[in-house]
Length: 428
Image (cartoon, rainbow, N blue to C red; front, side, top):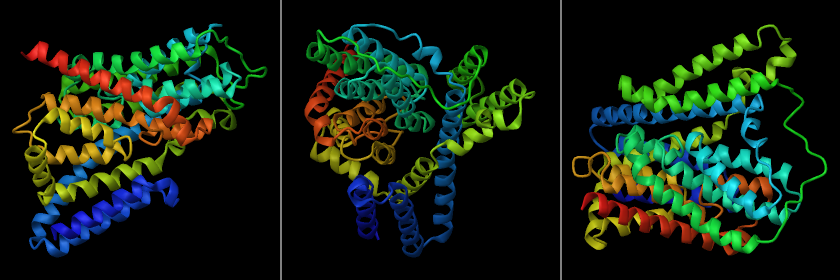
């Protein structure tokens, strides 16, 4: 049975990694893989009661992550529908391209920590189209936005889906991940920024002649500021809600979503239905990326079968024997996330290592949050942020690998160096 499960998982994983050349959505591959893996486990596992219990346990764990992501994505869509992000983007004004580069890098870094790396990338690249006319300049900016968004997402529990998974799973806590991974993530951004500043020095910002903002829907300055403050406030309040109530994060995000929904209804209650339709939370629910949600369901349920059949535990034992060092193992996991999706990598790692041996906030989990979150920047296909940038700015795979990949790798290893030195200084 174990051999069959491994073979099917590897084929499903390869299909996910080769999504673009195969032209098969990775969500389909994940769902088929999960279906086949659980079918084989049910037919060959022997104990049907145990299989059913394991499935219920896996569905419960998966649902927590899915509910959280759906809530967060909907909140971001509501803010975007109200042009709320213009609260930030309208304040970015400079004539030197290097000054703009640093400004955009740091805005992306901190915005990603509050929102998520995918949303931040979409918002910031859309902004660059309004600030920069030359496509070549925008390509370099897109590269630094991907690096900054992935680095920024790694040091908070809500900034990257892999960090969120570790947080919900109990492997990390809010304050510890922020204290432990902030400086490494900052180094991961500053090193590429410094090199790119040298490459782009002396250039001036050349803006496009005609700037068009999102859609035909016009919102007032008060509405933009209110929904931006409500949306960001809801996301930031989730870790606080969890620490006070000890309830799962998804409960906090759903509670906040309900409050945001109520505020939106009250804000637009006197407007015509045709005008306010685009601004409602119901409309935002229709715009969230459901294929992305379905992918998480499929891949997390697929990985769960390998955990319940103890395949991941055996793999962890083999890695410890063959490699021996946690820092090298996790560094390799981070590099692998540049080639394949980091969600199944982290999901597999969570199943590989027992929390009795590696407790909450241990070196393994914090270092994994950094490496899995930032390693994907090395290739354009290595993260959701990179894939989004690839589509928005028509970035070629080899252009990114040649111009940005090396800088991203320098940043990645710089952050690793900072984290290990910091850990040794703080933990003796």
